[in-house]
Length: 71
Image: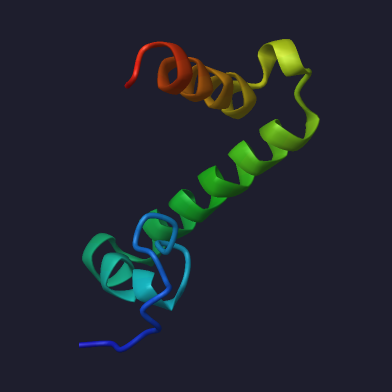
């Protein structure tokens, strides 16, 4: 069992030391592919025009559903 701070959430921790068990399970090559995917979406978010920016648009949808549909 690895110990870590209680303020570290699991949702965004796959690419930290907490992801070691995941890397062992899927192997270092697949883990590297996952990290490459994280980098690709970071670059997409940073460079894509707003109208084509998936993270931005999904964020707007989250606000829309939360404010107008009580979701």
